[in-house]
Structures are given as structure tokens and as C-alpha cells.
Amino acid sequence: DLFKAFLKTTVETGMPYVFYRDTVNKLNPNKHAGKIYSTQLCTEICQNSSPAKFIEEAVEDGKIIIRYEPGETVTCNLASINVAKVHDEKTIATSMDVLCRLLDNVITITKFPIKAAELTAMKYRSIGIGYLGLAEYLATRAMAYDSPEARATVDALFELYTYYTYRASVDIARERGAYPLFPGSEHSKGIVLGRDATALIADTKNPHLDWKSLLDEMKTVGCRFGYHSAPAPNTSTAGIVGTTAALLPIYKKYFVETNLSSPTIRIAPKLNAENFWFYKEYVNMDMNDVIDMISVVYKWIDQSISFEWMVDPSKVSPAQLYGYYMKSWKQGIKTVYYVRSLSSEVSKEN
Image (cartoon, rainbow, N blue to C red; front, side):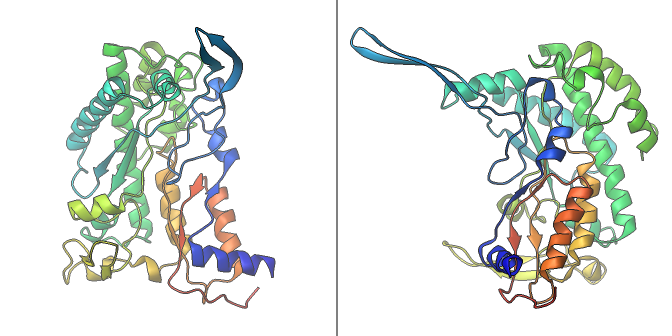
């Protein structure tokens, strides 16, 4: 009964969020400098954080001066790649270099609202590269989102994104210096995404990529950023640029989205007779298949992914929902964002 109440609350309120703290910290590239205790609202940012420590309160010239040791206050510095547009290797290499340089400049010139945030940003120089348009990319290439072919294609594609992200990070470090907390990090040991060069080469889908040379260079030169990737929800952005949201299946092939301003008609990008059946609708998919796809992407993400779930409580029992959470944990997923539903009826099955 308690779990049924949990499920009913979940589908009616779009909660709860989940943070798999063990997985997050196991793969933390900066575990030498602290721990990751939580994520933010959209659940894609996973970076070291710590509280401020009070030192003293003193009176100087009639003013009360409070001194404290600042903690680590994380801020978001995000940008996203449209997978439907940027997917050949040459364009990926160029785009990642430009994107990393832009985000590095943002860190340098931003006027932070509080000093603790500025100090944290300068120590880690963290960025969060994200993605949108994956469902469009797959459907317009005659691949169903839940197919083994799609997962293999995504694995190879996101390896390219990641390789050229780290390539840019090392190149910029050579020019401008590594992030200050680089010494002692997993990066300094030639480890990215929890894997060294040997493991990456063994798992590569792009044998021409020289992971060993890149990571050897990283150990010598350093890398510019303490954290690199964090795919955000991108729902509004996807609507503006005319592609599908984030890394998720399309919600429906066509529907009317309502908000406080006005209703908006949403139609799957480039929808036609050839790709109609390859656009798999999230509302009709098996969550296990979506978890399998996102798990593939996770291999190439060093922070987390804003991962929304779509659950039909008239078909999904509490035991099945629990199974989704356990499957996600076992397959290396770090966080779960909204759990959405079209219905608030709860299955009576156990």
C-alpha cells in the first residue's frame, strides 16, 4: 500500500527525483578534491560541493564583519549540440573545439552573483555540453529509437563527441593552462569516464581514434575543464530550433502543447511516410528500452543526463516501477528527472 501511494504521488506530481550517489561519486573525476552530495533541479549537474564554514563575527569601524571559509558553490555553464545537424566527424571536431572555447570564455568573463560561486568556477572551470535532436537523427535515418541498431549507432556517435570534447580540453589547456585542481584528479592519471586508455580502446566503436595518445597528452599537459558534459532537458530550446527534445524519444508525432502564453502545435521534424513508423512515441514505449538507450549515452557523459520518464500507471505496477529504478542503477544511470504520466490510475497488480 505504501508503494502504491508512492506511485500515485509520482505520477500525479511528476516526482520524485532520484540521485544515485554511489554511482555518481565512483565516476567523479575530481574525487581527490571532494564529494558530490546532490544534483540541481534538472539533475544533469554532478559536481563537488561543500558548505561554507563560519569563522568569526567582528566589529570594525562600527560595521559588523562576518568572516567565513567559502564552500564550493556550483553554477551551470551549458550549451548543446543538435545531433540532427552535427553528426559527421569533421563537423563534430570543429564544433566541439569552438563550443569548448566559447564556454571557457564564459567562465572567464562572467560576473558571478556571489564570490563563492566565482571561486568554485575558477577552481574547476566546469562546463556542461549537452545534446538535443537524437530522436530526429534516428528516425530520419530509418532507425527506431528502441532498436539494437540505434543503440550501436548512438554508442559510436557519442564516442566521437566525447573524444573531440577531451581533445579540445587538452588543446585549450596547452594554450591557457589546466584547471587548478587538475593535479591528483582522475584526469591527471589518464582516466576519463572511469576508464583508462586500455579500457577505452577495448570498447571503441571508432578504432581510428587515438585514445592512448590523447590521454598520455592529458597527463602531461592537463585539461582545461574539471567537468565536461551534462545534457540538459532542452525541451524549450528544441521547440525553438525545430528538433526533438534532448536525448529522449519524441513525446508524440503530433500534439498541442499548452502553457501560460498560448497553445503550440508540435509535429515531429521532417515527418513523412518514410520515417513515420521510425518515430517511436514515448507514451507508447517500454521504459526498459528507453533506459537501455540512455545507458549507452551514459558511457560518454562525465556528469549526468536530465532523464525524464514516461509511465502509464494503468499498465505499470509498483513492482515494475521499482524494477525501472533498479535497472537504471545497475546500468550506470546517475539521476532521474521527472516521472510523467497521462493518467493517475494505479495498477492493482503487485
